[in-house]
Length: 47
Image (cartoon, rainbow, N blue to C red; front, top):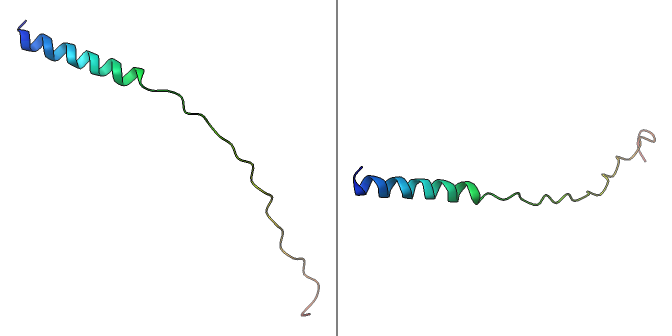
């Protein structure tokens, strides 16, 4: 193989391994939401 082809192959494999190894699991943060207030109950025609 030519020297240039070997260099390109080595750089490609190195870039591929670096891209695969760089992935880390993100921390998942769950925030509990406040309960939603209920609508006022119907108490008659008008007040």
